[in-house]
Image: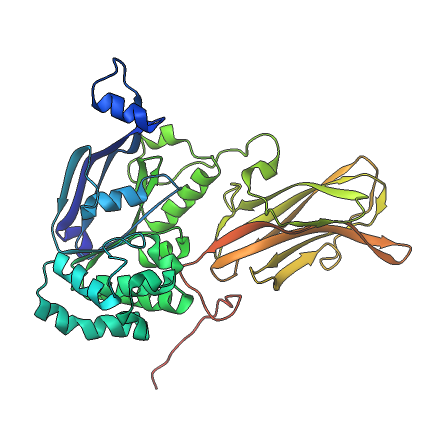
Length: 431
């Protein structure tokens, strides 16, 4: 049995509910509060519904879910920013929290004044904050802006100072919401290195993020929420795979109610109708060509057969395209390309490179082209482009191209240098 499994529980959430009353207009709230109406003017919104979980000392726990699933709400309840409607909550340990930008800061105060404000709220004396101030300012690295009002800060500067305060007040439990996403890549690396230090010191981390690569890399266990309900909890890979199914509406949540902390689930068949309905198409897609052939449908499919744009590094995936021929075309060339967000072609291939014979495609016919490969790209965001080209009397012709069509996110718990992981095996021998 692992040390974490026998460590004391420091956060216990039992049957937690958070209900908001929603009104169509402010006057309805007033009339109801004054008892001037016979019938309720409000309706209930369950931000959290019967959520239970525990966190042990030294664990790094991730919470994931779609927008509106209740992730931030549960963190605010644990930190005391929000009250709960019902349920039980136990917290054992000093909490330091980095929630949304601006939480706990006075915009009119300088950075240093806000350090003292936050430290005082945590129960530190001025002398204790004095001792921590150099470390806070060194980590934040905002220079002379430390003496300027925080209302003049960029979002990146703000989060640098907020995180520096959060980690330098000696917390036993660190709670972090999405705020780190506004920092630059170097600061994010600095923060995650601090996470590693905290884990080594046996401190507890509760982490909410849409960055699934970070969730996979830094979390021991993950809790999956959806529409205020806890669907499951388990190891990061299983929970991320389940989240991918939630994203495309292929998860049977009723079945999940009988599943105990395990994400093994039979992949459901793809929904009937268009593949593209499962994806968000780039509003700035580049669409051109003579239209002798036309790309009428497309999809990205993971190794379990689910339609998704969240892919796990190291696993196989497929890109599919359906092409309709408006004229008879001989030997069309089917292509796909992966670009990074800066527009650089990272990789791609086509039927000519792969020596795949396509033959004569008659007017009115359709072809389904599937490109299957192992995913060795580094974690990050990429864009998929599709095309159908060919030659007519030795002249190159673009029948149809869709550039920067849909995005994919590669989830990785190990990145190396460059665009691709070479999957290098390293041995070190003692001589």
